[in-house]
Length: 271
DNA sequence: CGCTGACCCTGACGGC
DNA sequence: TGCCGTCAGGGTCAGC
Image (cartoon, rainbow, N blue to C red; front, side, top):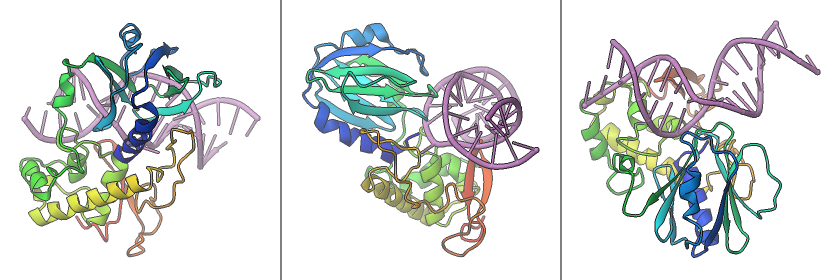
């Protein structure tokens, strides 16, 4: 479900409530996720204090005293903050209960999410192989330009490649390409440095705006309080196939790129 | 090495 | 009303 702005919103929302709280109990009631939930390993978290809540790519990172807890929401995962006695819903996989009877409940119908635990000095290698954060200083047009030199796949695929830049999913890839007026189908290596500069600029802009809006621009987003997103019609192209372009009124078209549907304006985003 | 497509699941939705 | 096909914002892996 969530892309980077949504995960960032959840991360910020968890910081205040969880910081310095002691985890007293982890209750797993459905351990089938992308990887089986490590029920046994989770037991050793009991009694540990939450030092910080952070994010890397779309992973939420809860730093405890001796261990780190890694949560990925996959396509359909949600976290809610409630009391432990709140009625269980379908697909509620796990509860993380804290010393003040606060409960963080993980729900994931499609089971593409992950809950992982590891010792602090034992960071999983896959975190190291991730690309750079799109909102970091390291993410520049020059960086992208350098990365695309040998890539002939469509620029949209490159934008969504987590080994290059992390956290950019189908929606924000489409949106940033629209604002940069670049066709998602263009072979990456055909982009100029100017194209890359503009694309990175628009990508950052659209991500920042979404974070400012609290990640609520998505129709399926649920906040920590369980409130659905507004879906404020702020998306220029995503989900607007067949409707007219805000810029030139041309009918927006859909094309499948690397298995993901992509909406764009062939007038504003020439090939 | 780069890239595509299949796959892991359930639920929502549109067409008939 | 119900059944069926299609699609969904992510990530991994086999195979070309």
